[in-house]
Structure formats: structure tokens, C-alpha cells
Length: 238
Length: 299
Image (cartoon, rainbow over all chains, first blue to last red; front, side):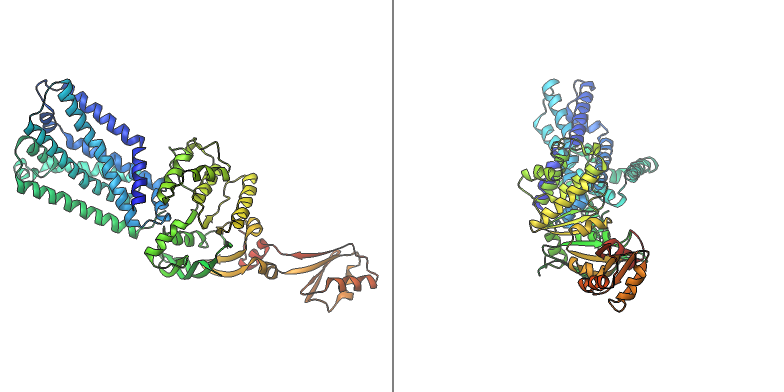
């Protein structure tokens, strides 16, 4: 497994796509920061931005990368090289998560740097704490959404299907937001990504809420990974 | 003889179709074992099961005398494979592709990449993107991939697909040299002439079943051997030789004598009988003719 992990990290570090995404999102985040009100610091900016949509789009794009791995024969090669299928799946999931994380955390950090160094909006200790708690939950969110898209990618296996499924998934979220009255939504909305953003950045975190979020994300990740591993080990590689 | 691959009643079913049907065979260490069979006979499915990309419906197999899913999986790192059309990252160079495979296999020595590229004649093209490679070059790169790290066992499925005559000839030389180095090779190919040139063992497969299994030494016996005499007095020669061999046929000026015969005695009889002999030769069927005879079709 260590051998496979090293190979994956090498591949990831040499992935032009990942760095291109990371650079693009970082520049985009700095551009948005530059255009925002001069008094707005990075915490306020991220709390009010629609970051969730960016997360979804980027992870969908990264899902395409997983399907690309099928086409390149990577999974087949790893199994032929003597690695167990569940190891191949978990290592790929880990690499997928790291890739998604680099893409998502780099704009946060570059916006923080831009806000602090260029705009001179130095964060207070409590704001900085809120910022890093926000990042920590972004990591958790990445664990969860990576598990979901990894599972989806190994099941659908084709580019068109992964794109279609991702669009469908995003549309479903939008429809849910639209058709359910805001009041009834508010109860569990706070556990969504947008909810976390607001909670993290504007209010002190309640410990039980944080734990609930933690278990919700981890539970979902375990479920998706379990389904993915089961499917992957039972299916043949062509 | 030590056995590197052994299958026992291996079955692979796709719905109602049995791609492999109770196949039991052995591949011995140091041999070049040819898998011969028409399209859809189950050769690739067998190889895919051995390499873990297809799951057997029933039966079992061992690799290097290890059986059981986990142990077998670990033994696969001792095998270099080329299954069907090799797949690569088209947007990466030949060197990068092999480097990824090297890392996946846990091979520390980086030099093995250039060694493998040199063996298959792709040295100097290592920086070229694989997407720009021709079919034959991709096939060569696939063989280089299989050769990485000098594996003990090579499993090659149609290795000369898409290769030009020079490539085929180089491939034959490569197989000979690998055999000399003591590698074991399981080779599936349609080009029977090439198989005859290098193989030490043959397994004939049809409809997922093992039809015949024999060594290169046994091939001539199975293919059949006969004595062919060219004479303008064919009718007289037939009369003189009656009772010799199992069967005699005449076709124009050619007399064919089948079965175990003493060629010296035959020539003596013909000369004493005043028969003009223009030519004498021992003829054998080749693998292709034998295959057609056995399977009733051409591949």
C-alpha cells in the first residue's frame, strides 16, 4: 500500500491539471478580493461568497480525472502489479482527496495573503481562529465529497455519465433549495456547507453542533467509501 | 518440473456464455508456453483471471505455487504483462508512463526504464508524448512496460499486434533471449508461425476448454510426418512400395508414404526396381495445419 501511495503522490505532484486548477482558483480568489469592499477581510469575504458552488464544480471536474484513470489503464495496472483492489481504491480516494484539497485550500490561503499583505486587513486572533476552523471543516467537506464522487466515478466509469451525474446532483441541490420553504429548511441548513460557512465565520461554534457535523461528514464518507470499495472489488476491470 | 501457473477447473461465465469452461493447465518454469485458439476461445479471459482483472466464476489457480486471493495478488508483482491493447496516459511521455508503472510496481532502479525502452527499440523517443505514438510503437511500449524490473514470468497477449515485419523479427529475437535468460513466458498469439519458432509448450483452447496440451517435441508427432518421393514412375513406385508404411497416396509425380518408414530401404527398393527418383524429403504439417485439422477452422 505504501508503494502505491508513493506512486499516487508522485502522479499527483506531476499533475498539470491539478496545479492549473489550483493556480486558476487562487488568481480568481485574489481577483474577487481585489474587487471587494476595501474594509472587507477574508473571513467576511468567504462567509458571504458562494464557495459551495465552486467546491462542487471543481470536485466534478476532478471526478472526470478519476474516469480518465480508467481510460489510461491505471487501475488495471495497479491490480496487475500485485496490489489488492481495496488498496487501489483507498489510495486513489486519498489522492483524489489531496488533489481536491489543494485546489480548494489554495484560493483560501491566497485570499488570506492578499487580504493581509496587499489590502492591509490584518485578521484579529479570533478571526484567524474562525478562518482556520473554516479550513478544517473544508477539509472534512472534501473528505466527504471526494468519497461521493470517487464512488460515483467507479460506478459510472464514463466521462459523459460522470458529467451528467454531477450536473444532476448539483441541480437536485438547487431544486431542494428552491422548493423547500426557507423556514423548514433552516433547521438542517445549518449543517450544509453554506450553513457551516456562516456558523464558522460569524458565530462561535457550539461543540455539539461541531460534533454532529463531524460525525455527519465522517459517516457519509465511510458509507460512500464502503459502497465504492464493495463495488470496485466485485467488478471487473476492462 | 517447477510450475509457475496452475489452473484447476477454472470457469468464467458471462451470463449464459462460458468464456472459460473447466480449464486445467500448467505452465512450467523456464518454458515458453503458447496459448493457441481462435478468437473468443477464452485466451484473454484466462489471462485476465490470472492477472486479477477478471474474477473466476468457479475453480482455482495458483501462481508460483501460491493460492488464495491475497497470496496470489502479492505474487503478481513477479509478473510482467501485456494484455490486449496496452493503455497509457496519452498526455504524458513514454518515460513518464513507464516511470508511473515502475513506481506502482515498487521498482527502485530508475535505469530499468531506459533499459526496457532500449530492448524494444524506443530509445530516443522517451520524451515523446504517447498520444503521438503509432499502433506498433504503442505495442512496443506495452512490451517495455511488461519488461520493467526484469520479471520472472511474462504474460503476453498478442504481443506482435500492429508490428511491422522488422518489429516481428525483433520480437522473436527478444523472446529467444528472454528464454535464454531463464524467463518463463505465457504467450497468446494468432500468428502460429511465430509461436512455432519460439514455443516449448502448446495449449490449444477452444470454447474455453483445453483441447490439447503438448510440448514442442511432441508437435511433429501430432502434426504427422511423411516421406515424399518425386518420380515420373509414380504408379510403378506405388506398386513397389505397397505394404510399407501405413498409407501411400499418389498425386501426379509425387508419392507420399505415411507412418513410420525406413527411408533408406524405400530408396533402395525404388532404385532396384529401376524407378527414376527426382527428389526425396521428409515432410511435416506445421502448427497452423495441425490447428486447422484439430479445430476445423483457420485463425
